Image (cartoon, rainbow, N blue to C red):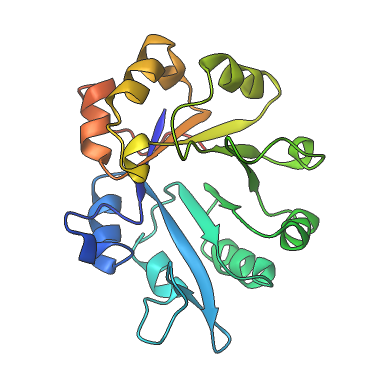
Length: 216
């Protein structure tokens, strides 16, 4: 399983989506999830509408310092498919995907060949774009509604699955983590976990060092 830090590996909430959190994540070998928007024609990192002073997307990528680590890009604005692709291709980065776009914007990302993960939750269901996607962003807002069989089904269909860890919605993650461990889903490179507690998750599943060469 590939562990992704959520908005960087932050220790206090103020560090979310900041250079210190991303650098900490990358230096430990973890990939990360983050939010991408545009401000005055420039790509920036920001969960909420940007007001100025946000970390630029190019600066975020510079923090990788040549490392090709997994990146989950939550796209918060339409019309960014081409500039995002161009920034990543320019740096020869290959372990990335985009998710959470509007349907029209998703079609644009698919059209130009960007790797797309489609959302699935208790409120969002499979649609005709699932077979065109690279993977699934598997979320659970109110409780773990899905079963390991659902994840195995996606894997058999050739999809990668990124699972949102329970603490992102204010729940204890141990029940979910134990399910991933007992079902052996954690042993698949095609399964990812997006978490606020990357080192704790790593210890729970492997007790060892993270291999940043894992594929996405």
